[in-house]
Length: 234
Image (tube, rainbow, N blue to C red; front, side, top):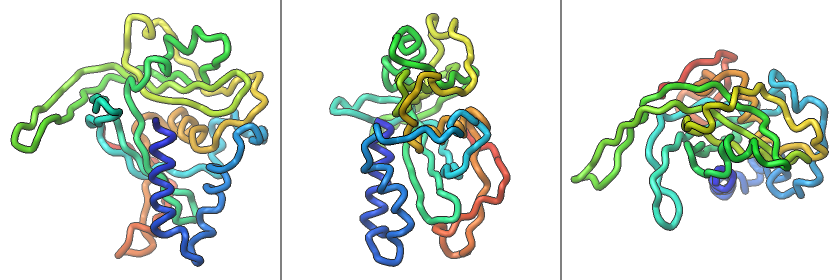
């Protein structure tokens, strides 16, 4: 779900502005990444270095947790929207990360699968989630106290990374934290976007964003990171 959402937002931006001759070059790397065969991704050697974020987009915006409706059944799930920008460009990606989106993406399930490898299991974090459901005239506030953590994994042979936040359960609370590290038997490099999301989270924490300033006081399309990491409000 998170991959589809990010791609849809990026493609929308591309259709609006990237197709113009004078801006198309901003998007060539993203187009190549989206259209390539994942099996052709080669391991470069710096993927396991959590401090190496070269080529990564910088997260500069992170909303509070809220309730989203997903699927045909319009199921309610907790999600958090974020936006990132690639340094020295105008390429912005936006998307959501989910809490307990899929039972098969949680650590209790993944750690029992012989063909899957957890690449990062973050620390537990206590949080108060507040969201709203219903119509404008019948709005209902929902509040939940939870302990959550970020969890990411990939196939043991390498390739695409999956990630989400998970709530504490009697099963997964027994699974300890795990520092960032790709599968030692990986032959295929992970997708760049998910690798960067996981590295950023593992290095800076769950609420970290980059401080940015615009080179144009009348537009938000010319953002430049200042080099300072700040905390976003949950």
